[in-house]
Length: 221
Image (tube, rainbow, N blue to C red; front, side, top):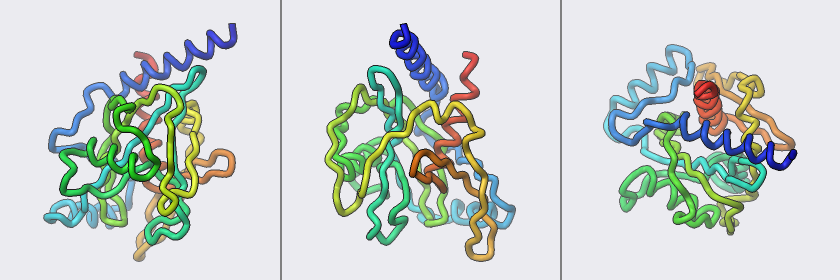
């Protein structure tokens, strides 16, 4: 009975995820994540967004894995030797290449390069809001559903570790902490989510925060 109940619960989470992302799209103009920044930082991002090519387009894949008895979110620990964000936790992803026809192509290519994820095994179920970063990227999060544990081969030069965050961590936004980073004289708030030995913060936690909010909003549907 417990197995049946757990499976039913996780199927409900999958339905909830699909409802939460229904109607999301890549057509312009894309909605931008509300970061809750101080006004000076908001003005800085607005100036960058108004410029041509100032924020580089990028995409990440938010891989949701459907196991027999649970859902999880796949995350990577970036290699410590990387120049940007070394050792931090991130979704597979990166900057848009000239050959990428869309954010979906961008996200799937990067996921294949970084962790060896087969693009043919990913069902795209929707998108989160574009996320501007202090490293001057505008990131489109692409949410994909994967049926069963995928075969992975992480790239040693980019990925130190791959792990799965239980999807139920997104059921309660109180698990997220609001903290402050001081950069270039600005106090920039960010979210942090801790699970086991993993500290998820910054843009990755911000995207998970948005997904958690969408799941909460769709809870009664």
